[in-house]
Every structure is written in structure tokens, then in C-alpha cells.
Amino acid sequence: MKHRFYNSEEKEEFLKTINSEEVRKIYEHLFLKSKGAETLYQKDLYSFTLEQIEDVMRNINPATMNSAANKKSRLNNYMSWAITNGRRTNNINPIHGLGRDWERKFIDKNTKRFLSESELNDIIEGLHNAQDKALIQCIFEGILGQGFSELISMRYSKVDWVNNKVSVIDKRSNKEREVQVSDKCLQLIKEAYYQVLYRSEETDTEKELVEYEDYIFKNVKWRTSKFPRITKDGIGKRIYIVKEKYELEEFKAKTIQESGMNKMAADLYKSNGKLDKEEFIKIGEQFNLSKIRVDGYEYYDIRKMKNQINEKTLKELYDIDVKID
Image 1 (cartoon, rainbow, N blue to C red):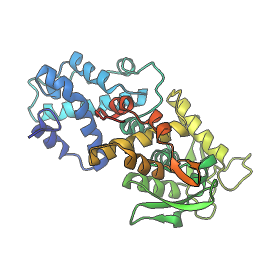
Image 2: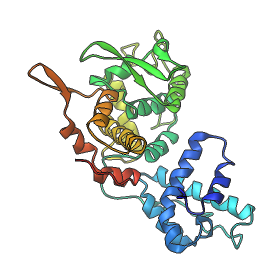
Image 3: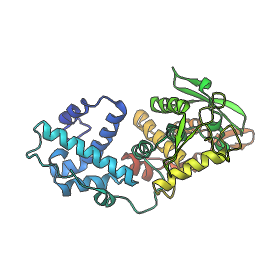
Image 4: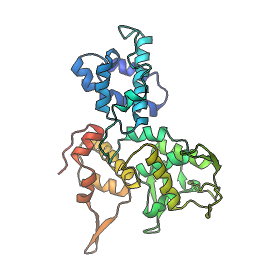
């Protein structure tokens, strides 16, 4: 029987101590990333020296300082659990007390266009506002629209809380469509709707949000605010502020969307064992991509989609080997 993790039984024992499914997935991703080094050194991650832990961090390849700090925190938690439960041969935690200079060593200095789900989670985790967390998660899961119109159109009364579906309208077609979203996305949408005060990522000051009918994304009540509803410029500015906060050169709506397309491609490959025309059509539908019209027929430009979703990118983001024709 093939195990997902190195020393799988003890990893599963640790995972049972975590109540949150979302947090459990984050640790599972960490253990998948550490498996190569554990196999090489023939010992569990909790027995690693500092130098060996650095090999794991380099393999994780965090995109931001926040991501590096979160990965270190999780490694630290696993190490502490092992010490408490007598699994490590000594009681010394090699990463305890290490600071920002150590984390900074592992940040990839090259411009990175796409983010994995884990890296995006790290960004979302560090944000102050549910409004911004939901915004990024929605784009990652397929809600965008021309000029952010699908996001702007989102209403509390148009969310199917039982079946995880959100009804949105793209101004290109002015037609309503339903988008299937995750439990996490649904929870963030609810938190965004009930958020009352908006805390600035730049100054930490708080301002009231404008309540307008039952729209999910709300404008901040500034003295210069001219519109009760959030505008495309307002949404664009929020994404830009996150980009600046984490010093991400390629962080914009399009690249968040394309990162989500790669996540969906990875999930489809894992469930279907292939990534063919059928899977690309599903991605096109989820993300409401434009179609090519020829001789009365409409179809997704799969060749163009493969510029974003390809073997190299899926290997880098999700460590899967897939053949795409």
C-alpha cells in the first residue's frame, strides 16, 4: 500500500489533533512537500536538523514573507508536538526563536505569475478584512466578470447556502449564471456580508462600510465616496493594496483567476486521471471564459488555456506529473 506521507501513521496521528479541516489540509500539503527530504534522509521531519529543515523550506518555495512565516509556524507546531509526545530524540526545537531574517532566505526573488492554493491561503490568512478575503477567494474559484461585474453583482439573497452556489451576472452577457463554490468560499462570503467596519491594510484605521440593499461587497464610507455601491475601481484598488502589502509583482485579478484555473485542473486530473478536452471545457464554464465563434459554433480556446494550464505549471504548483496533448 502506497502511503501519502513519509512515516504516514504518525503524521495521521498528528493530523487527528487538528479540528479544522482547512488547517488539516494545510498540514497535509506541508507533509507532501517534506516527503522527498524525509525519504532522502530516511527519517521523519520531526527528527530533522536545522539544515535539513531548510531543504524542506526551499522545496516549499514560499512566495511571500507571510507565507514563509506561516510555513515556519507549522513546522514549529509539528516539532513541538513530537517533542511533547517523545518522538524526537532530544527536546531541542531547531527552529524555535528564528526570526524574519531566516524566513527571508527562502523567498523566490524571481517574478512568480501563479500561486498555489496553499500560497493563496497564506495571503488570505494575513488580511484584516473578510471583504478582501472573500474577494480573492471568489476570483480564485471562478467569479470575476468583465470589469469585476460578477463580483459587484453578488447578493446575499442570491446565494444558495445549502448547495454552495452563487448566482452572478456578467455585464458582457447580462445573463445570470450559477457558480459552484467551496465551503471555505461560502463562509468568507457570509463573513464579508456581515462585516461592518473596514480596517485599512495601509494605516490600520477603521471606517464604516456602506450598507446597500443586500450586496456582498460594500463600499467604504469615505468623505470622498460618491457611490453607495462598490465600483470596479474600488475592487481594483483593494487587489492592488494586497499586491503592494505582499510585494507581489504579478498579483492581479487575472493571475488570481488563472491560479484558480490551475487548481481546478489539478483537482480534475486527480479525480479523472486525465486532463483532456472535457476537463478544459469544465474549467472554461467555471471561470466563464470567452468563447471563439466560428461558422455559428461557439467553443473555448483550449490552445490559449494551455498557455496558463500546462505540465510545467502543474508540476511547480501541485507536484503532479501530467501529460497534456
